[in-house]
Image (cartoon, rainbow over all chains, first blue to last red; front, side, top):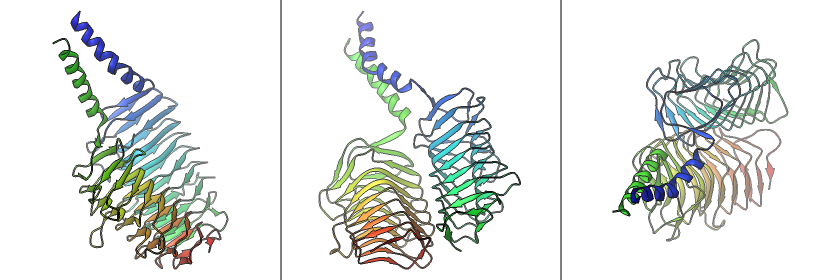
Length: 234
Length: 229
């Protein structure tokens, strides 16, 4: 009886708090990690991922998955390789609020309707790769490692209606790249692109407004400028 | 014994919770960070003539959690001082009363990819960045008046820096930049002797300056949305 009282005391003190905190968020406590069900997920600490491994893979069909990095970081050892920090080939995946570094690709959003925001992507060969329509990237810092061939800050492959806004992108060969034949109607608004061989390299059907570049070999290529607020130089 | 058991159990649970949280709590100043990771304040803290937080290692995130770091010996020390470490983030709180608010790098050492976000810095010199890709955004930086010619809102001393969406006032120089190629976007600068004093390789867009003796100096204006007096 005395032991039961003791356990009850502890349970009353702590368990309700723990239960409430976990109500609707699945905590990711180890990497690599595969998400197979829709829902909200969050990191609980910083993680390091072995070379060649993907940090988090989203396989939930038509995902509706939200991944909150919680201010924490995922660090890889795969720069130059093909492994991603976070890889989703399902739609409606959101990734936000943390740092991803040291991967071939920082984040890959591979189907319609995703969102990457408030991320720091440092030292990945490709910062963000977008392979789906109707995706928004906003308020991200995407900083590479300089002049190696075929490095991309944000690359958009054969997609429409993608928006990149409020991002800081530097030290890539291609800052923002949207030049595949099927790229159409993508918009690039209020970004700062620095120290890239190509700043914004866009398809003829893209639009851009309020972007600033510095130290870029070719600040703007393709696309349709809106207004007078795009500018900068090399 | 019946009391001890639950206390031990509770202590074990707390230890587990702290490990799972993986955020180190800063509970007193001065505090020196020597291990990469995430740090946070859990209450307001005061420094007495020293720096507030010294960062001696890269890959650090400091979340002030809405709390403040205050200097009791006005005009001394640095609120957060990172001499040479890269990938350091300071966010979400108030730093007041120090000689310098936040400093990344020094005139002889670079601190790259560092960021301050959503800070209120009250004092003569708010944010200084020596290194590439520094980012200052959504900050409120208030100085001690134009009579203090050392007053400086933001100084950017490395390439690819960005200062975005900040309110800066009561400084001798609102924003200063040298040897860079940086961007200054959509800031409001008020009651400074010099608003934006930029490098010839810098660019600025959408900034508004009011009550500044010299609103803009050097740099390249982009578009028609910069203005003020």
